[in-house]
Image 1 (cartoon, rainbow, N blue to C red):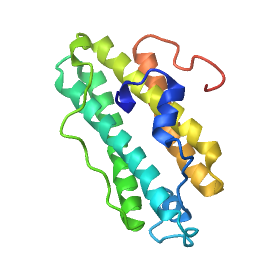
Image 2: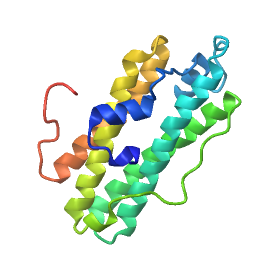
Image 3: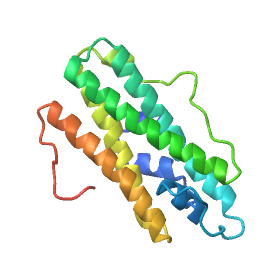
Length: 190
């Protein structure tokens, strides 16, 4: 089952974070925050873990890019919604580029997009179907980043993860609005 097809937010969070409770290094935080220089060196032995969790996030971002491409090419999205989907895809591309740079800065090899993803293509028959699919993906991303933020000892890393969380939450709210649903269904994210 792919990260983007998981409807259980807790399961998505576990898959995103992995069972090891990994965290990103200060170097990753610096790059995620848009700084060009690496921060202080990571504690001994943490670089491999940093690369692993960043690559997990990168893999999810690459899958999101592919999902939005599927929606764009489906011929089901009308002009204003198509532009919205392509805009969100652009955000995921920016996330992916930044995460790949972090992996490289840490001496790792960034993961690449899979040749194919197991998306529920047969269930996408209308624009609303595509929007619901995208909203579920964004909700899973919100849940994953929400689960990651409190795990970081480095507050700068928590801030960087929260920044991406905010972007994913806005995507989810806007997609819900486009579906005619209440954009923000509760006062707290679960």
